[in-house]
Amino acid sequence: MTPFPEPHARAPGAQTPSPVLPYFNQRPAPIIPIRPIGPEHREQLLRHFLALSAEDRYLRFGYAASDERIRAYVDSIRFGQDVIFGVFNRKLDLLAVAHIAIEPGQTARAEFGVSVLPRGRGLDIGTRLFQRAAIEARNRGFRQLYMQCLSSNAAMLKIARRAGMTVHNEGGETEAYLALPDDDYQSHFDALLENQTGQIDYWFKALMRQWRCFWLFGRCAQGVETA
Ligand SMILES: CC(C)(COP(=O)(O)OP(=O)(O)OC[C@H]1O[C@@H](n2cnc3c(N)ncnc32)[C@H](O)[C@@H]1OP(=O)(O)O)[C@@H](O)C(=O)NCCC(=O)NCCS
Image (cartoon, rainbow, N blue to C red; front, side, top):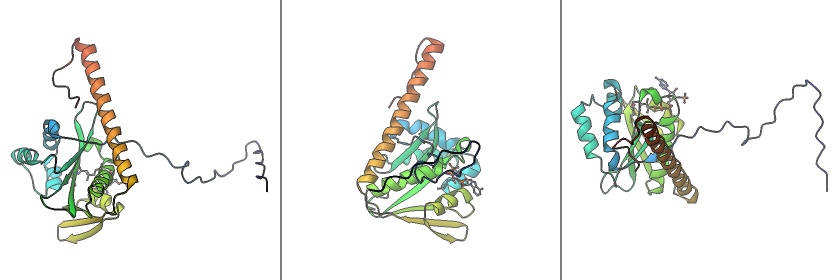
């Protein structure tokens, strides 16, 4: 058997180029705790959407949604059929929300919509929510993830193109599709892991919040969400 070559001792002060180790040399992606959310978070969803500026509402919904329209939209979310993912900050406010809308009877296509509050932008949260939505749609047997946005929405188009979506520009509107492969063991495992991470992060933040209230006021605030 040929022995492994002996590594040479590095001369003091010598600059050696670092070897490229494809996996270990990569900077790990920061963990973004994404968790599915249910009707118990309707209030937080409402606060999230109401916090969007007029311009962001236009980008998110395709029209300048009034507070009333936003209330109606949040009330109309069909939890159980649609899927909502959220990213919470340490105060348990929703920093970002992704909505996978599934039309009744539709088995091939799911529609994606997303919003990230300005203070959370540029941190990859939108990209990661898109990836999470694609895994979820795939695991539910959908063949296509569809998205609609304004053609002027440079950030969203960047996310779409980076994800390999097919993009069609039609005047001021853009439609984009991502063809989804069949689900497999890995895609279900990824979803499970992400949900667990998001859930643990949420519990931890809820606990810290209760602990802080207890420390400051000697009692826990009512309505601290632990679900
Ligand atoms: C679109 C949106 C979800 C992006 O969220 P985000 O968390 O900032 O997204 P990411 O950080 O994952 O990526 C955004 C990318 O777009 C880039 N970007 C942001 N604004 C941009 C602009 N005006 N022009 C070009 N690129 C832009 C960012 O630099 C980033 O690219 P990078 O990762 O190479 O640096 C967020 O801006 C938003 O909520 N907008 C209002 C609602 C909306 O438009 N929803 C989409 C309709 S479905």
